[in-house]
Length: 136
Image (cartoon, rainbow, N blue to C red; front, side, top):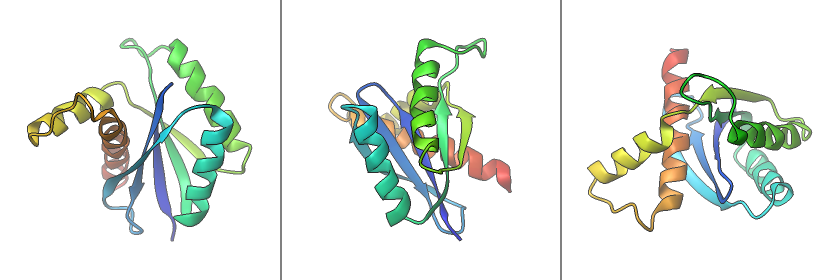
């Protein structure tokens, strides 16, 4: 039984989160610096193999009205490159994930100014946990 990898794609950083093997709990995993999509896809492919990933969830940054944005197009281009590696991908609405992640981190008493990577991987964990909770 494989795990689920969640991806919060950004122009500068890509936040990653993993489910536990039973697919009950999501945890922030790591952040990859997004120098270019090819490097990022290869890094994620290594994680998929290392962590026995069954499928990937990618946060889709839609507008408040539910429409695609410029960032949505970038995410879809990235996901096309990743899916060419024979990876099953599911999209999930992540409109509020970064704001919720920042709030969660602040509530824990952690300053967010220099913790952008923590916000990114926490955002991925939040929408992965949302997905896991809906599957129950």
